[in-house]
Length: 111
Length: 114
Image 1 (cartoon, chains in turn blue, green):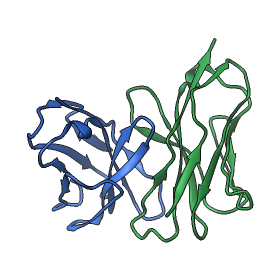
Image 2 (cartoon, chains in turn red, cyan; image 1 turned 30 degrees about the vertical axis):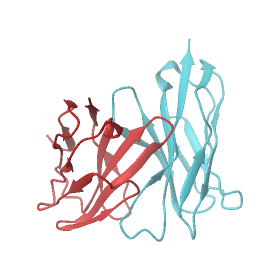
Image 3 (cartoon, rainbow over the protein chains, first blue to last red; image 1 turned 180 degrees about the horizontal axis):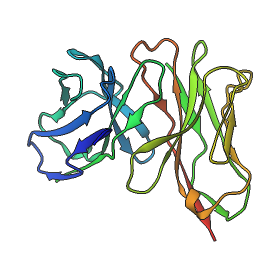
Image 4 (cartoon, helix red, strand yellow; image 1 turned 90 degrees about the vertical axis):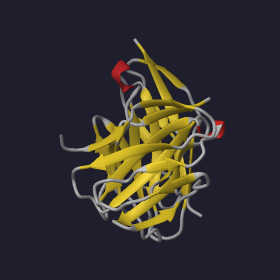
């Protein structure tokens, strides 16, 4: 299916575990982004990427790692999950000057 | 750095009422401005946008005008419907952001009752 998909949609993990959230887009957009959504904060940028193998930190990168070996994939890894990382995570993609398209989100709970 | 401030919610209206959600921004240069909508359990969808001063974005009966002099991009709709109940996010894409980053406001929840 065309579009941007995130997996899993829901995830419960324990403190200290490593967890990876997946993001896949079918448009070959150059830019991809990871945001987290928290009450009172709106969406905050975690990491972004301008192309394969080009990534950079956003506003709240601590505790997260990204990679982009292929244009269409942009996984987000929590190296050692903490309760403060309980959130809804959104992946997005865009081309230069175009609107950003968002995935459905992943609701992550760290217990 | 760039920032967006929007009115806190929730905004509670009856069907067919007039809607205004205020949004102001801080940015250097001439950013592009956006309104995104998030329906329950879904991701964000672009509602409308404006890329230069005095532009008016419009879609589905919603409108917003890019006001450079007041650094504002207020969202309006003349007659809301129950189906408009959602969270609305104002956002900007700055001219200095080579990576096309969007900066979001905190979101405003709209609740429309029949």
